[in-house]
Amino acid sequence: MTQDLAAFAKEKGVKYFMISFTDLFGGQRAKLVPAQAIADMQTDGAGFAGFATWLDMTPAHPDMLAVPDPSSVIQLPWKPDVAWVASNCVMEGQPVAQAPRNVLNRLIDEAVQEGMHVKTGIEAEFFLLAPDGTRISDEYDTASKPCYDQQAVMRRYDVIAEICDYMLDLGWGPYQNDHEDANGQFEMNWAYDDALKTADKHSFFKFMAKSIAEKHGLRATFMPKPIESLTGNGCHAHISVWDASGKVNVFADDTKELGLSERGRTFLGGIMKHASALSAITNPTVNSYKRINAPRTISGATWAPNTVTWTGNNRTHMVRVPAPGRFELRLPDGAVNPYLLQAVIIAAGLDGVRTDADPGPRHDIDMYTQGHTVKDAPKLPLNLLDALRNYDHDETLKAALGAEFSAAFIKLKMQEWNSFTAHFSDWERDNTLDV
Image 1 (cartoon, helix red, strand yellow):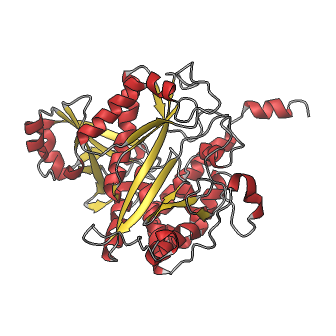
Image 2: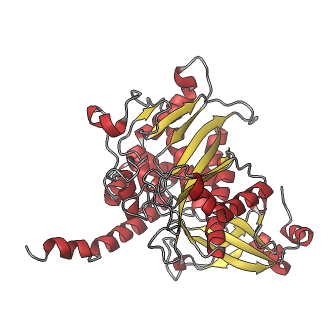
Image 3: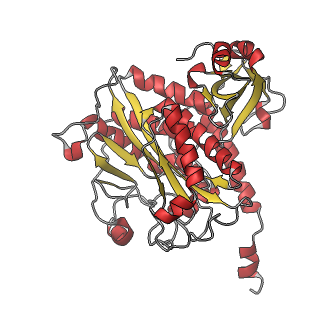
């Protein structure tokens, strides 16, 4: 693990460090710091005005200091004289409670105290669009079922291969890349890891994908539903929990249903119990609900849930158990904050374990054709407002993520919702002008 960033710079030929943090809305903020100044910054942090980002602060707040975590440092493969390093936000000597990476670190510590080391992998889907963001970039990518289209993925080989090559160089263990279910959409997979490492990699991956796309004259977007008639961008999370040694998967038990241990089942119970509230975190934008409540897309399926159900190896449910010892949460979308995604999974799962939560009945039906037959499962929120209200009413989840964080998140997201409702749209004119 890297301890001395100045020594790292000297060894690797790094001239600048990007000291980066992620705000409540998932925006990545950074200062570009010369290597000659990094020793002081590693101790004291880089100063930011929190109000200038999406944090619940005012111009009167003191400097917020982003203190780099040297274990997260990544030399930019496409610009090796620059290194990116994730940071933890501090103000007047105390961690900023609403800062997403701090929220995650606290919950990881709670889980470790209970003998649980959460490991996750994520599937980050994205579109490659034309630079103006209004259309897919490949005019020949027009198939009605484009998933795994080998011609389409090869037409974007230069972008996808460059990103994958960099992940190989970084030791992330990438293992597959494909054209996804929407025209112009791609997915790249790399090995699972400890929750904080996965969050840092997720954050860096978004930065890298956007940067390499721009280099090739394209625009990468993780927006949940960037094209109305096409499948949206999910960010599925695969979840397992391991013992203190990191070698024993405590979710695995071949004697239990689907190979999921009692600990795994109660952790899943927490996810199911809090699903309607945690969707405010996993699906955090107005646009998010155009994905999880979408009509059938051109391909024939949305591949997104709209009901709180779980199953075995069946992709039409909110949670599936594809193999013993882990489960996949299919609810999150591309707009999810990388740190808050991991944090809310741990928060809900810990509550499930502590309360011996029952995940409820397993359903093995096709939810897209038979979902109407399930009468005892809640529907996911119809919009961001409903999700925020559900989160605000879930006192347990709010407390787990932290009172200061929850208050700030709800306040700023309600401002976003109010801004959306104040927006005058063409739809209103088209449907109301002649009443």
